[in-house]
Image (cartoon, rainbow, N blue to C red):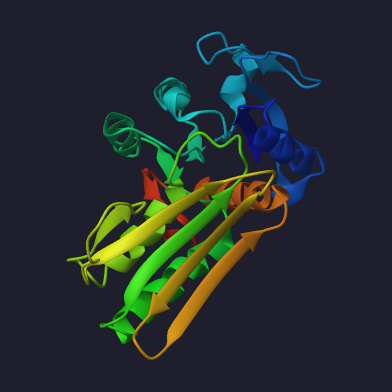
Length: 249
């Protein structure tokens, strides 16, 4: 499986490259794209200027920035390459671009590349359904360099709960005066230090509280998940895939 990495020189791109160079999941690193343009493997500063050899890749794994998604999907579509979109913070227009690309190529789109987080979302759904009167709050913690808040994973967890509680809605942070409604899902973002990623779901009634939590200890966790997604994706036809569909296969 030949792969290209979007954001090759960034923290996550470097983690994916390291594992790929070790042959994880049968990956073979062809190169990547990064505006820094400096690496020990072939690198281009943009998808438009990518060398001809990049077109032989089977899959692109993108950990760059959500604003790059249109350019990388243009490249992927032009060369029939599958794409794992692992960035977060996408606009509605960018999400629509991802959906439209999936009509022509296999696209894997997930707010979090952790299998553990995918299981957390499933557990949250089950708990929200089993405890219909419970109130739900989500707390997420990340390093002080993360740009988007709340995290894409926290919003994914909200969406998971809304599958069994369609009337629920997210309240991003809380301030002022007023009682919370039963339908609220409070979402709170903490940015401090070098926390890789923590997501906690608190589900409580007047008589009991259930806490579900996932903690990432290393960025390698997400790199492993991205390579697993790529391995799964290259066997699929055009379509939009995510962790849930991969785990169900």
